[in-house]
Amino acid sequence: MGVILGFIERALAFIETALLVALLLAMIFLAFFQVILRDFFHSGILWADPLLRHMVVWLGFLGAAFAASQGKHFAWEMPRPKNQALGRAFGAVSNLSGAAASFLLAFASREYVLEETTYGHALFRIGHFSFPSWASADIIWFGFLLGGLHFFLRFLNPLKEENR
View 1: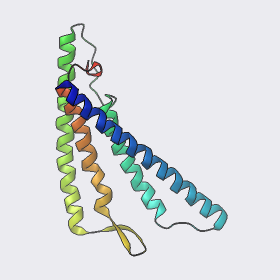
View 2: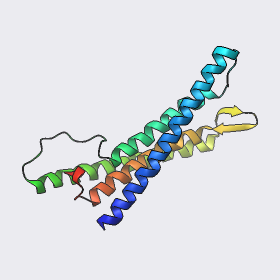
View 3: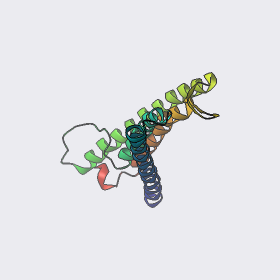
View 4: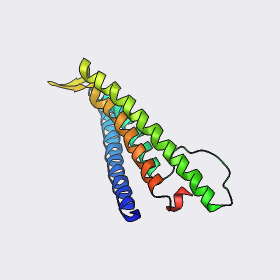
């Protein structure tokens, strides 16, 4: 069971890392291109700034989920007990409560995204293409869901060194 959980955890972390790198590179390129256009050609891309702002939100939520996979996310600060079994129990409670909070936030934010979908607001337009507001807000519930999944996987696999 631990091997399968470890594989799932590593696969999710790999995908998140790839998405984080791709997103960060796209942001750097777009911001640099925008600066070049403004400074040298007195022009710019109208939709670049709002897109970059929303990409920062995506980067933050994906980064938070990745941090949860590495055990570097928020944690309860308490002294480490001398008893390893008690330490694992504290880690399990911490991971389970992190998973529960993340899943509740994912559910609540999914409701928000569904409301955004019904209103159909556009964040910006690129030619005839309209970028809907829900597409940017989708990362909120998805990020909480990923983070909760990482906490839950860490709860199920208490023998991992980072859980102690």
